[in-house]
Amino acid sequence: MNHWYSPGLPEYLDRKQDLETTANQANTHVLMCQPTVMPSAFAPGKCILFGEHAVVFGHPAVAVAIDQGVKVSVEESDKWKLEGSSFEPSRHPHISHIIENIFQYSGPPLDIVVNSSLFSAAGMGSSAALSNAFGAAMYAYLNPGEKLDTVRLAKMAHSAEANAQKGRASPTDTATSALGGCVVVSGTAVPGTRHVFDTSLETPEGSREWAINVVDIPPEIGDAWLVIGYSGTGSPTGRMVSKVAKLISEVPDKMEEMETIANITRAGLVALSAGNLEGLGMAMDACHDSLRKLEVSNKKLDRMVSAARSHSLGAKLTGAGGGGCIVALTHEPTRVSEAIEVAGGMSLLTRLGAEGARFL
Ligand code: MEV
Image: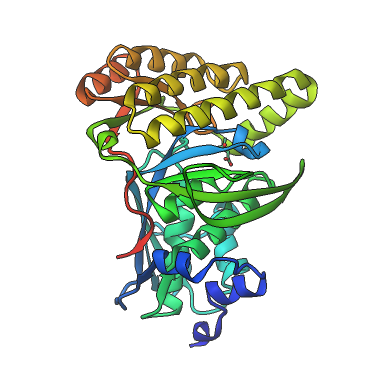
């Protein structure tokens, strides 16, 4: 079977000279693959607490992995299938990028089965989770018994995101889904975090470099819940990122809002690291106000944020905006869910900082 000879993920990334991960970091993130009849993997979604949009311009962002995510299994088949239907590569750019460009796969057709517990295209990192879960399942299929390196997985999924988003994608969603826990993405070193790896991308606005760092979530934070409220309409990441780029080119003063978001992100991270839930919530409220000024919120998101705030420590839109989701930090998850639903949204609950991508 010629897929045994297809380059695996590590070989591909070796060729890209993408091996700056230290042995120590790699050890931290290596998981064992148990050979299975039907290789499967799970990757969590993410929730950005601070820094969406600003991170595309090199400012820091803080995101946590959530309990919900995407499971993918692959199995040889007589023809290419996705979710039981014929697989059309042009309609699934993340999956086709991974098949063609990452693994350069030319083996037998595959039946790809996807199960997601995320609202799709809603700012919960569903495409990043799909890329990670599919990349991991493909890796398990092509390299049975081998280890999964989640740092390399994160880089692979970032290239799939960038490919699908006209070259504009930060590594936030993909790194958080791959590594799990709480991830801080930044253009420069962030005090109080542990550096894991560096990554870069050529975007239409120029070359971008990011450092991926992690922070431990203190036990006090574990007392709180995140309630994610879905507005019912999608959050078109590529379009929203382009919209912000256009706004800034037309109104250069708006670039200052990016600095404001960066300051809020740093303050929010200090609060998070100290287990200061009140401070964390206040920073989330402030972040929403800045995102409104970047014109990425809408009436429904604002309505859900207001409704959630009455029982929350803080609430904001999360992800690209324009639709999609809000997130509220709370000790009263049921009340907040009810408030979001009364405001016309759908809700789900998660703790902060779930485990990252893994073989099943
Ligand atoms: C999308 O979840 C977050 C954005 O910052 C885009 C990105 O980071 O690639 C809007």
